[in-house]
Amino acid sequence: MINTLLKSLLSLSLGTFALGMAEFSMMGILPDVAATLHLPIDKAGHFIAAYAIGVCAGASILVLSYQLAPKKVLLMLAAMIAAGNILAALAPNYITLLAARFLSGIPHGAYFGIASIVATKLAPVGKSARAVSLMIAGMTVANLLGVPLATWISLHLSWRLVFALVTLVAIGLLFTLQRFIPDVERLPSTGILSQFHFLKSGAPWLLLAATALGNGGIFCWFSYVSPLLTQVSGFSANQVSLLMILAGAGMVAGNLCGGRLADRYTPGQVASGLQCVAAMTLLLIFCFAQIGWLSVLLMCLCTFCLFAVSAPQQLLLIRFSPGGALLGAASVQMAFNLGNAIGSYSGGLVIAHHLGYQYPALVGIPLTLAGCACLALFHQHYEKRSLAKR
Image (tube, rainbow, N blue to C red):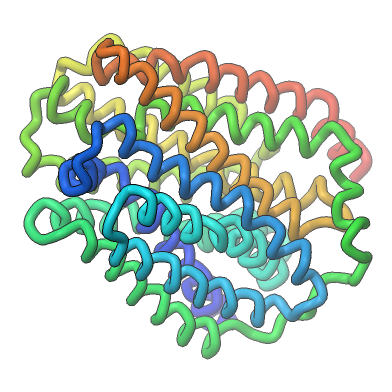
């Protein structure tokens, strides 16, 4: 039973691995993409934002597919991941790559939404957050291994091969989903409009705002972490791949710790505390980015916080979206990537004004603190009441 559950969760995590490579590789290969397409670095940052906007647009897939079996939806989304990334690999110019990045982002939120539901249905009682964190683990492993590999491939071969590699992973995903995911029963059919009823409560809005603002603050800095490390912290371009492995290790550790903490304590409090730590870390990055070893240590701490909040936030949206669990689970990724778009755009504005690559971290601090405040309000007004009723 445990072995079967593990195979199912690892199959789901292969999808988040593909999505993690598609999303986060752009941070490491951004200078190479900009050079190939003859773009300034701040304009190349639009490729990050385009993916994030595609994620937000992709929620409509779940709204329209609520009557389909979860496994069938997962297979459709895997095919879309493959199609979007092969188009990115072949894109000849700025406009085409921008469109490809948008299309690549469309299945992202929907996949996380349906995969989260499947993971919680398969999980033993009391271990839902850990099951979700294992599903999300593919994205953190992508940052640990896939993104550094992508950075190396881009530097020594071609950034186009990065998206070709994601396409191959997505094709493999199709086979693993077909073989290892059981036919989980679909959610009760409540109609299209009923899926939106949970949005009448303030709880999901606070969670979504916290996700967008908190991640937006971190992505102000992380979208431009590669030039920060080379031009401010003093590392060479050849060292960036290794440094991205360290950043990915922080994400893996954060994701696993976040899932365990959310099962043991109240998820809202866990997420709020971690976003507060992230805000303090961004301040330290701004102040000490010139010190190489400290810049790397702070980078790992910030990426730890970035993914430590993922499982708690994902689980909370499922719990506080009655009648619309699919849309609720997907909306976390919408908010996450909306934050990515806000962060990369805001960080790009600072860089465009020639203030230095450490300044995006300073811009991100108030956004992250605002996300922390939203989580604190959520815990006080909604999570406490929910716990009292149990």
